[in-house]
Amino acid sequence: MDFSRLVDARQLASDLLVQFTKSVDAGNRAVMADTDEASTAFAHEAQQASEAVSKDIDSLAKILRELEYSTESEMLAEFTTRFDEYRKLDQSILELAVENTNLKAQRLSFGPAQEAADAFRDALQSATAKAPPKNALGVQALVAEAVAAVREMQVLQAPHIAESDEAAMTRLEQKAKEAEGLARRGLDALAPLVPPIAKAQLDGSRAALDKFVDLNGQIVALSRRNSNVRSLALSLGQKRMLTATCEDSLGALQDALAKRGFTGTR
Image (cartoon, rainbow, N blue to C red; front, side, top):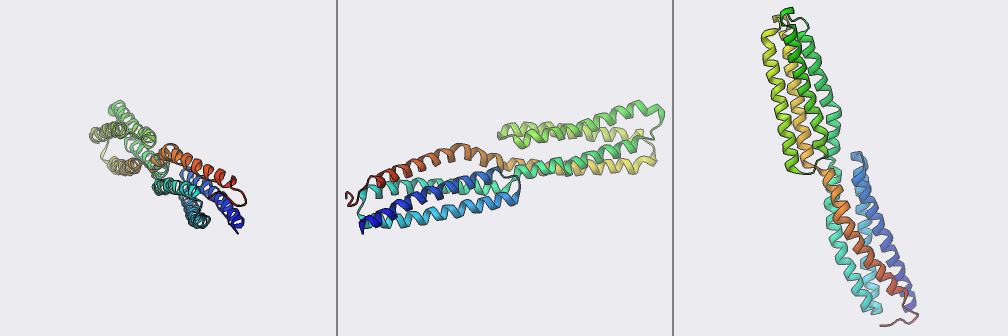
């Protein structure tokens, strides 16, 4: 009877390691996934594996009590404590991972924000195409300056999305604000230099700039949440250390059970 229960204990200890490894791997895939759907699916897989670990813990604890294996029971209790800490951290990581705020910021930057910046350039060029010859050089300079300012805001988006330091993000935002001001001053300076017929196009360039600035604000807000950067940092730092301690506990438990003989030592 004892030998049969010992075999069951060994199998459960092995399954514990398998399910724990599945949870760790699925959690890491959730962090690295590049779509909301994949992140959510992997997070669900990680949670299911963690639940399986908890069930194995309960089953194994019962058997160890029946066998009166006090040393192994203590080892399991140690693993349980470490696993509870791991699971709490992993839940936080998974919640961040499925938000995908950095990826969403990237998509906005490379999609709608890019389109709005191009629309600003096109509307501005259309508005100034019929400027009087005497104003041509001044108009061209102002247009180039305004377009360059918007492009600078675009360039600043990528490092902001990748940045994890809040002070550094603030500096990038300040640079973007200065560039926005330069673009708006350029539009104000252009107004008296273009003919009345170009007013509608100039208004269109203002609308395109407003849209771009609004999108830039959304990108900054998503980037500030920094869910992908934070989840990756936690995975590579605290989670990796907790994973190692949990695996050590399980390894010690498996070794102890492997040394038990037919009758066992109580």
